[in-house]
Image 1 (cartoon, rainbow, N blue to C red):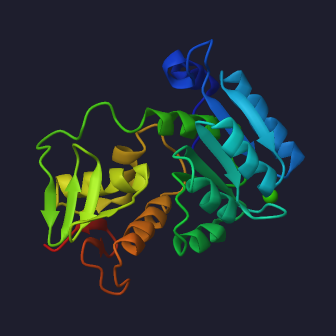
Image 2 (image 1 turned 60 degrees about the vertical axis):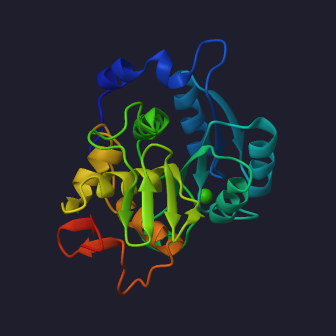
Length: 251
Ligand code: CA
């Protein structure tokens, strides 16, 4: 797992990514381990964000509601209600970016089966610098410019992906996808005949500064498939090309 240097990191730190001095972007950190929470809060404050913290799930949901943060850093393993349930509840009233912290990489496998609506995942132990870099990458999305090429809606059987309005419909019914899910569909559907490797999808969706476990792509693809009501054994729209990556179907 790579890590950007402190020098690169400070070069990347700009007002545009943290908000203005008077109105900094707000990050809510929900983590029960005091040590980790303190370090994460310290790094985020140093990076120019306003930070609120909670050590427990219910308190985290309440703060997300009252404080309207721009970003949530959310631990999966929490006392009270766990991070997965916090994510579900928070998603009913906010479109904030959510980055989930998982204790072991097998928790990523667990998350693949759940459609919780997080935008990114980070496995412990992680570097706090990496977390800050991930948050910045998230805040840069959706991209200022659409994917080069046509911006017509793209149609695959009953699935319609509209890069202009960032809407997805299936047989005319709107599908509620997260930003990350939309970005993955956007990249895949822009070049439907191409097989996209996980590394390529990471580059295009998260940006080249992203470091971490490429299996996050599988988590989001699983969520997309669940929302499209796909048969996991025989998906119609986002196809797995074994040993290579993903492509759009039918094709
Ligand atoms: Ca924990």
